[in-house]
Amino acid sequence: MNKFMTTFWHTYLSKVKAKSFIITTVIVMLLIILAGNFDKIMNLFDSSEEVNTVELEASEEFTQQFSAVISEFSENITVTDEDGDMLLTVEDTVPITATVESDSEISSGQQTEIEMALDSVNRQMVVNSLDLTEEEAGLMAAEINVDFQAAESTADEDSTGTGGMDEPNYLNIVIFYVTVFVMFFVVINYASQIGTEIAMEKSSRVIEMIVSSVSPVNHLFAKILAIICVSLTQLFFFVLTIIAVIYFVDIGAIISEFGLESDDRTLPMIIYSLVFLLLGLVLYLSVSALLGSFVSRMEDLQQALLPITLMSIGGMYLGMFNLFNPDNMLVKITSYFPFFTPFVMPLRVLDSGTSHITVWIGIVIVIITIIIAVYFAARIYKRSILSTDKGIIKNIKKFNKDG
Image (cartoon, rainbow, N blue to C red; front, top):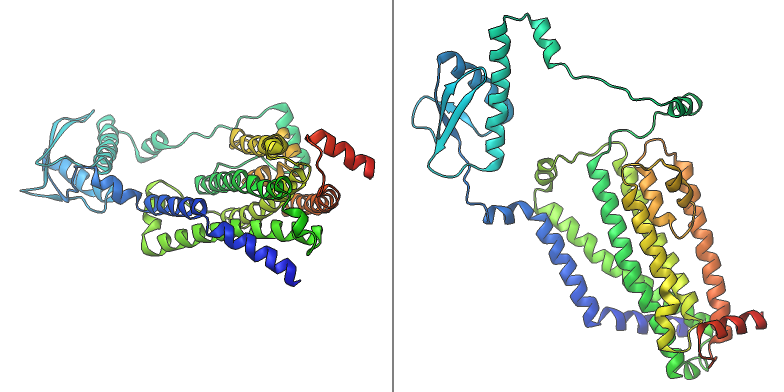
């Protein structure tokens, strides 16, 4: 155990103290802080100012209607009799033609609020000019309800009792985007690191001295665990920065500004995303160690890790291209393929029709695959650790012959 921990701490500390680790971590943390202060940064480049009062040059009827409506769309703008921050001149009604004048530029948000208020007043004046009853006016403003059905989808609803995916929640979609990009970034970064660690030791023959004091299996497991802990350390700093931004910045106002709201799928989405992020990391690092065990020269490393790169890219694109259609057959099938599961299964969580049992089946599949990958990585590493054969194919054939 002492030798295992010695290898673990040596690998872990060397990676954490590396300049690449520190620079990358600091850059991502700064990006998170900038994202949390996005509204303040935009205000630095926005020359417009917030206006609080508006003076109307219109009929008494229009003034009364606008004063009642503007409070529904804006909490800051109020109507005043004279000397307002801006002057609203109504040139014509039904439809409304108006001009808004101010000493400074009005922000785009307040321009939208004024336009929405004028649009509401315009509808009221149209209703009044047509002499419609309240019931007829309500019918004009009523939303249409169209249900598009196909024969196959109707049959599926009758058999399953579900009606497909609900209207997408954009906060959950943002969580999915962040999870996929972070997973892809971590996998590409640390998969190459674990492969490089193993290949470098074998190519430099340093491993001959190492295995004389520690067993190859313990050495491999210490390397894998150390790299996993390094990646988790980096993720810890990212999460810590996010928590600090949420605590010090009114993140709720920013989320509301972009129209993002949580629903009953948000909490499961966060939990399952973190679970699959961790499992995906362990899975790809274990397979990277497995592939790196076949390599005896650094020149063959990129070729050996090519499957990892292709599968991670494939998983990411599967999730991105099916973002608004998580219940199609391609997503359902690939969500059970262990190397795509960490990327695709969180997408299925977006669909309210996906049960927890389905998600847990994906979790079990990934865990079983991790166990198999670690088992074969240990066997291959132990048998090929002193191999001097050049080329991946020769090492694979040698392993099959020895097995």
